[in-house]
Image 1: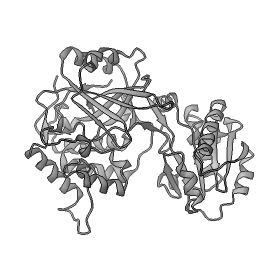
Image 2: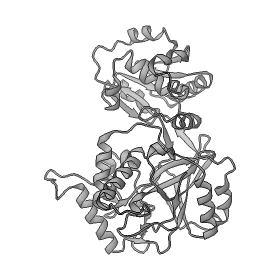
Image 3: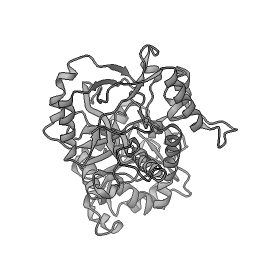
Image 4: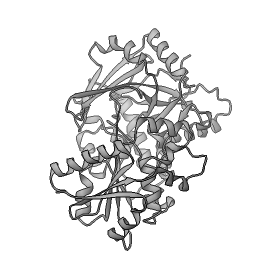
Length: 449
C-alpha cells in the first residue's frame, strides 16, 4: 500500500521574511487575476511568483512564466530566502478555522513524500475527473523548476486516530510556524524527525490506500513527470526523488474534516424557459416554490438551511432563476438514474446529487452534453452560497443550481469502486496553504530507507 518518506523541505527563512503571511498563497487553481496581482504586491518573494507567474505579450519558448519561475526559485535559494532543512522530517500541519456554530475547529494532518503509484494499482484512488489543460500547465512548471510547490491533499481511514494521539506531545510545544491566511484560517507547522514517531507513521500508512481529496491534476502531473524522468534515466532504481510527490495526509475520521458544496450557474443557453423546464422536471421531481428576499442574509440563510433539511430526507437541489423565487427540487425515485449509467456503475456514483444534476437536468433537459460539461461550456462553478443569487439577478446568468455537500462516505465509496465524480463535486475546506514547505526534486538524491 502507501509508501511514505520524510524529506528535507525548503522553507522560508525567518531571518529574511519577517511577515510570513505576505509570502504565502492559496493553491494556484483558486487564484483569480485580482488575487494574483494582490499577492504580487505583498512581497517580491510571494510564492505566487512560482506557482502562478504572470504572462507577458512577448512570451516565447525561452522566456515565459515557467522559465521566470525557475529563475526566481534558483535566486531565492542562493539569496537564502528559501533554506533547506538539514534533517529529513515529516511536517505536522494543523488548520484551525471557525465551525458553523462559530466555535474553533481544527483539522489535523501531516506532510511527507509518498511514492507515486499508477491508479491501476489501487493504492491511490482518485474521485474526480481531470482536464488536459491544467495538467500540461503544471507539467511545464515541474519540468522548469524541478519541485513540488503545493502538496496534494489525500485522505486515509483510521477510526482509532493513532497519529493524532501519538503527536499530542509534539503539539504541546509552540509550532515552528503559525500564520493566518486571508480567510482567517490559522496554519501551524511542526517538523518532526524522531525515528520512533516516523516509524509509527510508516506503519500506519503502509497498510492503507490513499484517497485524493484535492489536487487530482497535480497528482496526474507528478505521474507524467515521473514517466518523463524515467525515460531519460533508464537505469532508475525507483528511489529517486522524482518517483515521489509532496502530499498532505489527513484522517477522514478527523472531526475537523469539512466538505463544502460547489454550486452551478448556467449561462449562454438559447431559449431557456423556466416554466417549461420546471414542467418537464415534474416527471421526476417534487417541486416546491418559495418567495425569498435574495438580497437579505436572512433570506439566503433560510434557503440554505431548508436545502440542508430536505437533503437529510432525500436527494434535493435548489433552482434559482431570479425574481426572488426559489424552487426546491426533490427527486422522487433514484432508480431513474439507472438509465444514465452502465449497470456496472456503483449506486454511490449514480445517486450523487451532482450526478442527478449533471445527467438528469443539465444533460437531459438543458442539452448541455457531457463533453460540454467537462469543458465548462455554459457552466460556472461558485463556492459561496450567496453569490449565485446576485449573479442571476444581474442578468449575467440564466439559472443557478444550489447544492448540498457531498458526504465523505460518498467520496470513499466512489473512489473504492474505481469511478470518478463530475468535476467540482467536492470542496474540502480549508484549502492547504502554499509556501509552508516546498519539495525540491534534487538530482542525484534518493529517499531514505
